[in-house]
Length: 115
Picture (tube, rainbow, N blue to C red):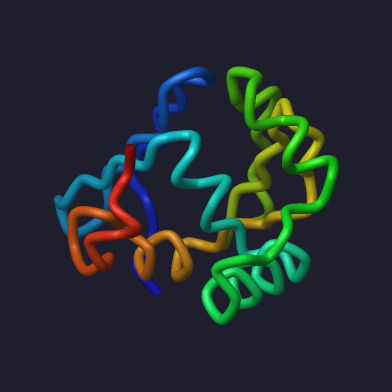
């Protein structure tokens, strides 16, 4: 597992990770929130992908008109970072492997590029 050498979180902008191999990744706050590894977020992404007319849960819909920021970040052992978002989402633990997998500069489909 590739680990970060340095994390730089700008709570209103994004997370920059410098990896052990010398590469750098940048994730906007909105991109991280959209790609949360939490079970409820994965389920919502799957539902929206299979049904473009899916209705967003009220808590998600209500938060769309407010600026999204990270309120707090906590390291989880040596394998992940836990992000707490201003929209109340706090169940996503972003493992280093997950962050490498969703790196927008590497392999994300065009419709998942950061905004």
